[in-house]
Image (cartoon, rainbow over all chains, first blue to last red; front, side, top):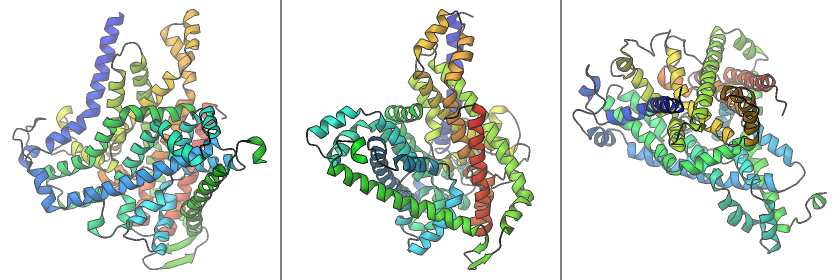
Length: 273
Length: 292
């Protein structure tokens, strides 16, 4: 096999796998612009024969999707900002400071990643009831403000920042708060991009926790809304496709926008880990 | 003691360190350690928040778990699900990463970005998309393959269909991880192998693969932990059906805890699952022969 033939074959195989990877998204988006008869027709084509936008327009009048969407956006952005900040500052302390119990604390943070959700979700649910946080966003935000995954990743990323830079800043009289906000934060941006996207995704896709602690429909989040919507309009496929597209596209767009830093960030933490 | 190991320690460093450590300890105590304690205690009780019951049962919940046919069935499903998905995730991930990394492919970051797309999409929504794709009436899977299978309703295909969806969603993560591993390999080892006359396959088999072992271990362990906990795809796509054929261990916990409100029994189940997770994690460290 010549090198050229190998090149063509490998690229074609990758391209085919790429098409398989992207196809469900493309199919979903195109279907969301189709009429129901066309979606259910025997003879189907990928592109809409009769292009309509009613699925998106009607969706909001029947079901308050815009509300769910802004609720999810608010909660996911708040959690992401908080987790990025706490992970970076904990990662900084755990990687650059030496103190008794540091390794114990870090080992503990690592082990939190191994605990399945199902072990803590029932007692957390009872705790939230005891605290009187039911049906409020406190219940969604406060219990996830610190993340073992985030702290672990930021520690790995910040370890790569040379100590000399910090020492030089200290000699110039910078205090630790200045060093953290003005030196560590900008230098850790790849790591921040990667945990920010993951954290946003997790907050955005979380289903069970908002389903349990939020009772008022106006406060509910998008993933729970999507499930409710599919229960009520189980045969209105066009509307379901539109609703699904709306809950996937924001995350996908953020990813495509930041994907360079993001991939550099996750890769860095894994290689050093 | 601190002063000796770190002579430049300043006042602001001590303040920052104390605040961060204190807040971390308080947070993890309240939202992790105390809940684990409550769950552990609860697993020995009959605990139902709706009727307000909290009655000591001893080991009865655990005995019930181990004598439940559904538990063993769901464990078999979970093991099958995890093994198949992990084999494909690692296999596809490694093969694709090596292909992209090789000199044969020019648009490396394009392919990497494409394969990673499903990883960063919300599971609830993606599970709906696949549910529609498998739908015999409107779905595209039957149309493309020219088949007439009711994928999610047929006991023979339902779990396979969920596995395929999960592989599709997750293999890109392994691609990115292996690519990171490949880029960090020492080039002198490859060079030495080439000088000694090793061919491409030999270099891969005896140099690349062993050097990638830590990455494989990382991917396998994170996969085990996440697949033992997987339930969203089941909740959306099959609700455990047809019958109980796609019950995964985590789905029973969801069902017992938040459909039937048997908190005590569900807690016992989740501790069993916790131990299983830890055991499999330890086992994969053993198998890989790495003692780090």
